Amino acid sequence: MRIGAHLVDREVRLREFSLPLRSPLGTAKGEMTERRGLLVELRGELETGDEVRGVGEATPLPPWTEGYEECLATWVTLRDAANGTVSDGDENEVDIDGVPPAARHAMNLVGADASARYAKRPLAAWLADRTGDSGGSDAAAEVPVNATVGDGSVESTVEEAESAVVDGFDCLKLKAGARDLDADLDRCRAVREAVGDDVALRADANGAWSRDEAERAVDALAALDFEYVEQPLPADDHEGLAALRGRGVGIALDESVNGPNTWPDPVREFADVVVLKPMAQGGPTRTVSVARRLRAQGVTPVVTTTVDAVVARTAAVHAAAAIPNVPACGLATGDLLAEDLAADPVPVEDGRVRVPEGPGLAGDAFDRLVGDDSAGGGSAGGGSVGND
Ligand SMILES: O=C(O)CCC(=O)C1=CC=C[C@@H](O)[C@@H]1C(=O)O
Ligand SMILES: [Mg+2]
Figure 1 (cartoon, rainbow, N blue to C red):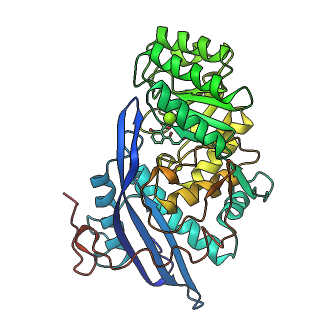
Figure 2 (figure 1 turned 90 degrees about the horizontal axis):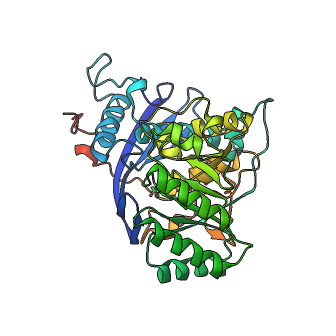
Figure 3 (figure 1 turned 90 degrees about the vertical axis):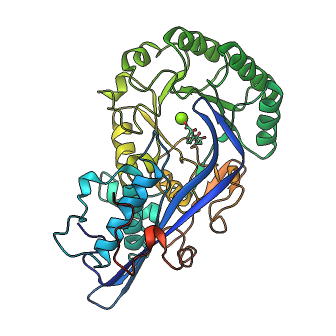
């Protein structure tokens, strides 16, 4: 398959980037210190002469997605095929089913942005039109978001939580599982005491607990009126996850459904909430259709980033807005980055993000982000660097 195959004079360009985090994000899976990814731009013309333009981003994060090198190699091949620097039938031709999730996210987004811009619709409305049950449904104008509080001492956790509340957040997600359970429960208790009863709290253990620990955690978190606990057990412990339900705190799946693992089936028997990371789901379109199917089963979808750069974060906001009545989402991750690729069209204010009016992701705001393409050796020579 070829990106933009229906376009005349198409050109795909790539830009590699690396963005440091403001301070390391402590999780049960270790510290996140930087995000490395790819921006993709597609330009071309329809046969009518109309110009078409779209931007996408792939910011991989193992184990949720493929690693950076695989993602880059996939895109170098996709770019060279689209730009005609390799011929049809060449062994570099990419099979769509083999495109890994983060690379596929960029592929989906570049097409969705281009299509929504051509239709002069915000991406959220375009997604809602395409995935709604009855030939179109409205997208929300804003999305509620949770603050993300990394692992840390009781004091630093409380400090971060209080400062998020001062900034207007009424929902906080605390990373857990990086220290022993009693220490984590002390952090959770201290935050509840500090922020009072009106702030919704969530915890995310990234699969770190044993069944015994998870049971103990769930009971303690229920007593602290936590809304849900994300991935209390390893991704494939479906039976264990199902057994934790009904104890007074919701059970949310993340790694069980984002990444190489097989979804528990039927998911409603294993989870109250499913976290959807568009970067791991292969793009915003699939994210919104999966969310609507979850809703139909009585499972609550929540959209979060994989701590992406501004293009994918903006896309995730549009995806969340296309899901009717979406609860607070994990989209307040821009501030975790020390720098970004462009001014933020989706800043958080009072715990909410206003959805950009488009067309597409944010009009022409991202049009100058991909400059000269030198990714994987550049497209000019037709090389397929990164393919081995
Ligand atoms: O959900 C949020 O509040 C923000 C995103 C977030 O927490 C994560 C993004 C990427 C990797 C993880 O450490 C973490 C998660 O597990 O959900
Ligand atoms: Mg998680």
